[in-house]
Amino acid sequence: MNSQLRLYCDTAQLSELRQFLEAILKQTPLSEIEQHQVILAVEEVCANLIIHSHDCNSNEFIDLNVISSKALIVFEILDFGKGFNILEYREPEISQVIKSKRKGGLGIILVKRIMDKIEFESFENKNICRLYKILNSK
Image (cartoon, rainbow, N blue to C red; front, side):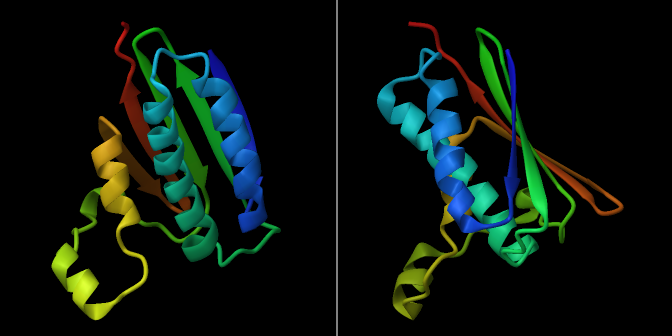
């Protein structure tokens, strides 16, 4: 199964993203908790792109392709903004984040812990982030 969604770079679009993902994930063997975790991970990447890569410019967009099979679901996020390689991200020390009372900076840690595999490609001004989740049949 293959599903696509174009999100214009406005944070109001994130509710549409959640609804889109909920409809897809209900058709998988993932538990309700796992579904919410996956939604959180995909939303985190998309929100970061909308806010940091595109400065909430609603004239710009990101595309999400979801490819699923019985064993695997892949979320392919494509954009043409400032690149951010999630694979090169260095996790901050959580104690330092708490001590400095810094807001943010922990979302990517969650993405890495929730998803089973992450890939990142960038060429010219095109960026592709793929998030993989293995579907354990029960």
